[in-house]
Every structure is written in C-alpha cells, then in structure tokens.
Length: 487
Image 1 (cartoon, rainbow, N blue to C red):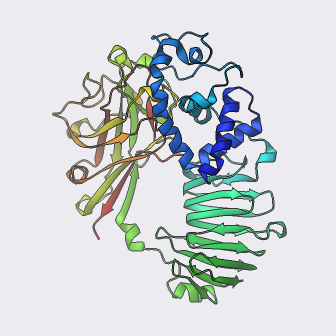
Image 2 (cartoon, helix red, strand yellow):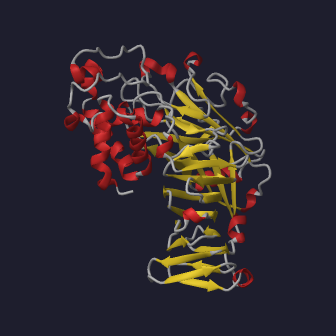
Image 3 (tube, rainbow, N blue to C red):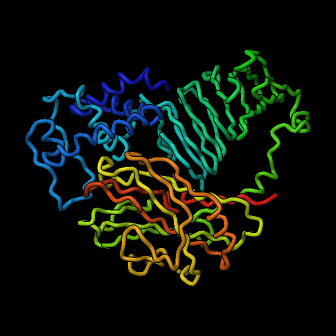
C-alpha cells in the first residue's frame, strides 16, 4: 500500500476519531491503513518525538487541558495509568497544529483497544485454521470462522484457509508469509499455498517475487522458497504466468508445472519430469543445520518478576519489563527464560540467536520512555536452574538483587544487549555472538537460564511498560533460541 497516496485520508480519519464523529466503517478503514502500511507505522514512531515536546505541558495541565483548558492532570499516585483521557467532541479543531502530537495517544486507541467487530459489507473472506496452528504475526483477526478484510499474515505452523465471498479458496501451509490485497489479488512472499477457484472467481491472481499467476478457472499449488524462487503445479484447469522482468507470458495446463526465478520461467510437461529435475527440492542439509528451541519446548519456561507483587497485573501472555522511576521502584520488572538443551549435541554448535517478539502491554505512555536498552545475562550457577515459573518472585528469583538494573555478578555474566527504539511496541529483537555461543557450549545440565534486565530508566513516572510474547501466547512466537550447527 502506498503510504503517501493514503496519507491525506489517514489524517482525515484520525481527525474524525479525535472529534468523536467516526463511523464503524471509517474506524475499520483507519485500522486497515495503519496495520497494512509500514510507512504509516513508522510515521507514528517519528511523530512520537514531536509528542514529547508537549509532554511537559501535558504533565502540568493534562491532555484535555491542552485541548480546552478544563480537566486537571492525572495525579502522581497512578504512574502507570494506561488509558488516555477522552476528548470532548469537535469544539477544538486544532488537528492541523497538534495531530502529530496526539498521534501516539491515537495509536494507543487503535492498537491496544479490543478489535471491533468488522461490518460484514467491509469483509471479503472467512478465515479458519487447523488445530495446533501457530501465528507469528497478523494484521487481521485469526480466530476460526472470523470475517476478515485485506491484511497480511505470517503463519508459523499448521494450515490456514481463506474462503472468499466470490468462491475462491486459498489454503496456506506454515511457515508462510501471505497477504490479501482484495477479493481478487493476493501475494505469497514465502511458503506454500493451494488455491481452488470457482467460476465466479476466474481471474483471481497470486503475486510471487518474480511473477504474477492468474487463474483461468482451476486449482493449483504454489511454493515460494526462502531464496525467492517459486514453483507452480496446476492440478486442473489453466494458470497464466506473467514474468516481471522478461515480460513473457506462459500458460500452464492441467498436470503441468513451472519453476519461476528472476531469470525466467521453466515449464515442465508433467509433475514427474518436474521433480526429477530438482523441482521444489528443499535444502535438506541446511534445514538439518538449524535447530529452533522456545521457552514452550520440552522443559522450557518463562516468567517475569516485579518488585511489588501487589502491582502485578497486565496480559498473562506477555513477559513485562521496566526500570521504574526511583520514587515508584515497586514497578521494577525483570524477565527470566529457560531453554531445554538436553537433546542437542552442543559440540556441533556454530552460532546462536536469541529472539524476543515485542507486543503492546497497554500499560504506560511511550512518550515518557526514551530508547530502552535491555541486557541479556546467563545464569552461570547451574545449581540455580531448578526455578519454577509458577512460584518465581522478586525475592526468590535466581541471582536477583535489590537493584532494578542489576544481578549478582558472581552468578551471572552478560551475553549482549538490544535496544527498543522510543515509541516502538512491536517487532523482533535479538542477541547473538560469541558470548552466547560459548556459554551454551559450556552448559553441563541441559538447562539454559537467561535473564533480561532493563538498563534504561523511565524518563518520567508512568512510562511505557515493554512487553514480549511469552510461551503461552496464541498468535506470536515465544522467546526463541535458534541454533546453527556445524555441517
């Protein structure tokens, strides 16, 4: 989606939301623009810096006072209040002056509130998944039998089926990265899909990295590899291939196949010929070199701790972390992770990568938090690996100390750090390198405990609490340890 093309519409919809005159259909359009456009999401991050320029005014008079001078600011005894004050209609039309300033607060309204029911006349398909399917990310609802509009999904495991109102059916197999543009056009960035068409969906197209596949009344399978090459198998009917670079057009009939790359299209007269020629052959050796563990694998576990247990609240599928204002240190939080290495031959380990997937907690204001650094430590005293996530507390957590940004350095060692940019609540963040590899290879009991500690204190109380998907998250990947083994 072209962000500049939709920027004016996006701002007009934001204005309507601020003035409390937006309709359900317009709200859906606003959410679709926000979630489907990376430039617009980046703009929110940039606008948050301008938002901070009025933060001092907000603290003295409150957001509502900036608008109409009526409502006092929040009291300091609620430093992590996450719900911004409501605006009062349209009597203060100052969007052109402060739209950017309020963009961050608006993003909280859009992103963090429960998704509204989508009006049926704005949806184009129904989604369903097989049992055990797991999502990495999605800009549309993923619950079974949910009505959906355009959007992008990244499926980790399982099968997701999209039944379009025009009769087209598309099933993607995880791992797959897939986007729906409208009821007649989709794109497969990576992974596999099977499409089955109806007479009313003739002309349905699937975009791949190097070509456009146009259905002429058929069923077919598509596979896009991680290297960007694609393959097509036509089970019945006919599919036209329009190659991007060469501008050539090739028709593939029933029981024929084609391999598509940047260089062109190779056509096979039957499936047997295609597969004998190495068609869609996976890199088995490369797959065997990669081992992926999560905190939900084997004896893996994860938990977050907070200094004051009375202040423990928030989504139960997120791991939350924060270095609070010293006057509110009861809100300090740290994260504990454990990975089960017992089935891995660590002598073959060549490289390692720890990845965390961020997700909004709905707690605190991003404008009050600068770029945040988080340091990852390894627990070196293996006698302490016996902790249990169900009863982990600030007092009994291994190697924990009273300071919110420290650990017992006689029982831990630093493996590296990552930074979450100011205003960012989504995305993946990783730590890798020799210290991580060496520590894993030195493991003796098959249990790896990692501790994430905040290093950046909130600028002002009430700042954003960062969150990362936990092992029980239904749609986002849990903390993940990717191991690369020697050939």
